[in-house]
Length: 337
Image (cartoon, rainbow, N blue to C red; front, side, top):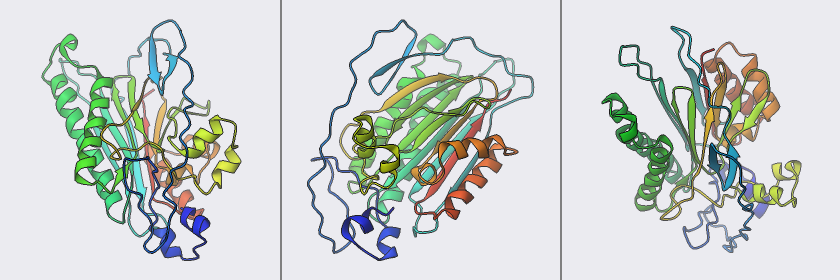
């Protein structure tokens, strides 16, 4: 990240290599800075850009206070012998000395008379804080979310608890992220992390999101649809037409987050639900990837790769070839079809 160098005029690569992602959450967490550097601790203004509630016919999902209509609810039946597949890759990058990103994947395919749906849990977390606090926070977040979601939902699915007695998937995922927030706030007060988590049950994807890691949906050759919203200062300025996408890419505060896991006692979590068409792909990634590889190239690489793993490896290589200024993490999930 060039934030510290541009803001304070520091020439040293070492400072940039270990500079944390900034989270100026007023009154909620101390600001973490490079040693010996005086910093203006006045947080930037947080401007409420929440749109007025809309009224649309059900069924709907809630995403960052915007009501959106669900796609048609027809399910598809997977072909025999065809299952979810995925690829993962993470790299420290070319500048950092430690990897503060973390990822976790779980995939269950069952073929039996019980008729269990295919299940997957995928999480990307990008830590922030001191040299080791960030990596501890991201690791703890992925573990806590996975533990709670597995115990509260997946084990009940395996135990054949009737559907009407099981908690809603979206509620369990949200509660798991909230629990991770509480644990990190208590155990790593100087750290924080983004969390982008996706639970797939059958052909439905449930997303819970905090921070500026991203989730994209790719359906066939129709391009990428970004299905999460960055909780960053520059994104708010873009939404207010005070900044263009091009200006945001080089803005000195482009890494400043106004919402992260572990920075306060409670955290607002964006949630959404998507019906996944046959052959569609979900991409989860940290800003070390999307900051170096634009959406059109993400789409081109994924569309021309032999497998999700091949696409992950190629994308991480591209990010590093373009400077590798941050840790790089990506998960690509492909549905059968």
